[in-house]
Length: 139
Image 1 (cartoon, one colour):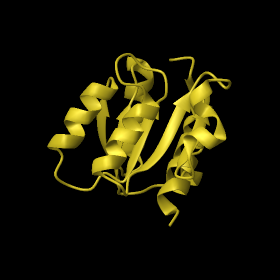
Image 2 (cartoon, rainbow, N blue to C red; image 1 turned 135 degrees about the vertical axis):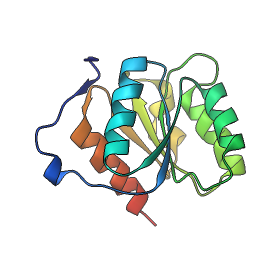
Image 3 (spheres, helix red, strand yellow; image 1 turned 180 degrees about the vertical axis):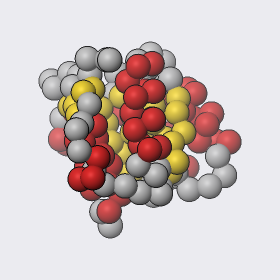
């Protein structure tokens, strides 16, 4: 199991949903585990291994993408730039940034903006589910 995610014990307490999530993570194990977990909670999950692939997927997806869940540090297009570019064409998209670097410059509160939330790695699947649901429920 990837070091950045650990398993939860009680699925009865984990929130569910039906929204569409674009999950972008360059670490295969984390991406697959998070995607399987979120799909198991009812979400439609589109996955990408980097920002370039995510932009192609979003461009080809004609329906609403409610939430972008992205690692902040990735090859090619990083999470912050990806969020900014997606917001230009999908201004309603909410953003959850994942980071294993608590001191990363892109995580400065003034830099992130009001519509982005950060999830520090390592995280539990329970924490992921609650952050996702919390963001989706925000006006």
